[in-house]
Image (cartoon, rainbow, N blue to C red):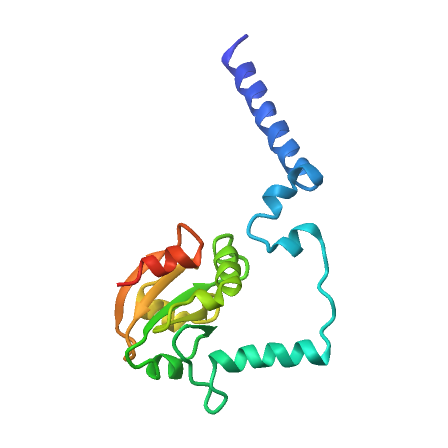
Length: 178
């Protein structure tokens, strides 16, 4: 065999392998990869029960526990959408800006873990979820280039520390705080 035939055969093997990978990913054999970072109900295809007035009242009460309705001021030990007013209202609390994108494979599991463990966010810590795709000025201000970045700031918005998520858990995130 000459070199040209070896290259053609190698290219064919690579193309066939890539085609098999794509095809197998769309069938049940590839669901583990496609489900990475999804909540358990999303992985199994289960649907959530429709909300009743009772469950909506409970959800609202849980929201009231972490957010003051007047002015939307954040409280310590919370996980909420970002706003500059919430950072300014932080006082002595530790504030983490979680630059999140719905399409990010590390953001989804961290978001799910934080949401599942809201009661484990220590008092004095507020995590604010920043939309990576729309908060361009904020990304530029803190030099954020990856959607799975967390920036610790004080109440004046001065950066204390910045890191990218490697272990997408609330515990690992809390451990990084200075």
